[in-house]
Length: 293
Image (tube, rainbow, N blue to C red; front, side):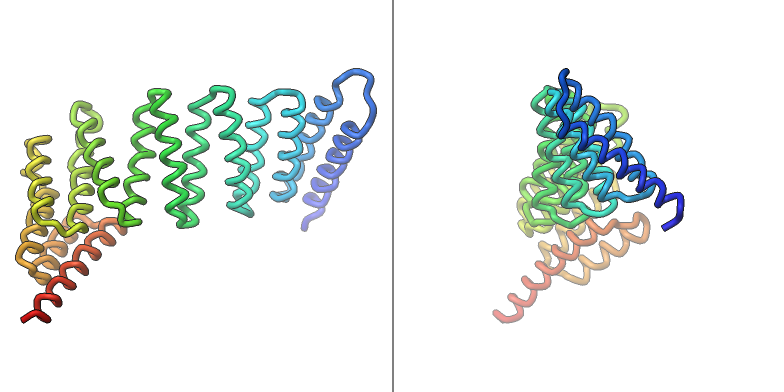
């Protein structure tokens, strides 16, 4: 630790002690929590400068408590957010806990867009931990809150996350419903309509994983009705050719179709995972047929 950092930690501790002294002391007029809040704020800043993140986080929690005593709920929620930003450097669990408290307060005081924003942040922290179950819970909450505030673009971004994780957890009907719904909404928006083919492709890939050829064919017909230009895209051709390969139970054809598409438009990890699942289902079907003959 450098001398400068040691000095900053010493100052952080000094202001923290001043705050504690204020709270524990007897004051004739009711300003002790206001004075303590000021000292805690200075203390947390010094701990941040020293990159002593856990210590800064714990002081911000004390600051939040002071604001709650003063019934300054917005300031309390902001202090919980500051605590979360410090804990993000050391402990996702602590950061999530602080953000949850901030979200609860923002919801209580009617700051719904703030509650939505931090619900989304909690979802992102769970995503980093690969905890898709919990990520879905908070992205859904965030989508609902954004929708209440009519911030449709942000609501849809959160819904797309829900669809992505639902598909990863093999909850395909839920993912399909979201992708189709957002494709439908995007058609009448000049800025968003270029994303329609991507949403329909994702919905189609989820259909492929279910392995029901009739459902896939019906979906492709519905997508054409929804967007007549879709049948002229490479995405449509990919889905139609893969559906044919599944119908013919031809694993080699399935592989070739994917390779050809990937050589021109690189497939991301999510799409690759779904395509591998669909291929594994097809292989299993092929083995079943072989065993029967």
